Image (cartoon, rainbow, N blue to C red):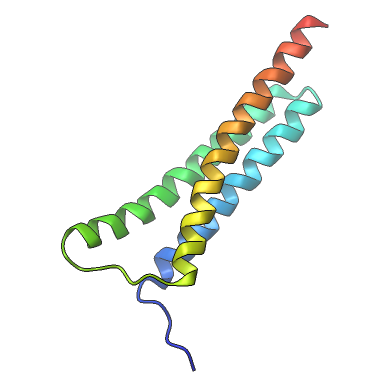
Length: 108
């Protein structure tokens, strides 16, 4: 049986909160697409909150590493970091898409 990574709970928080952020950003785009900009912005706010939670988890790992207690690198850790970075980029792109939909709506 394979041993669990030392920081499994933190890694799972990165994956979970990153996924929540990306999901909310995608929902924000869909709401903007239908002209529901208020809900789109609420979904972006929810994505921001999920990213704050993910960053808190990540900061714990960074603090641990900076204090001399090395963080075990595992495929799950890489996956968690990838989830977080993808969610950040996706949320930023969602903001741009929402802004475009708002400009299109204003021109109509």
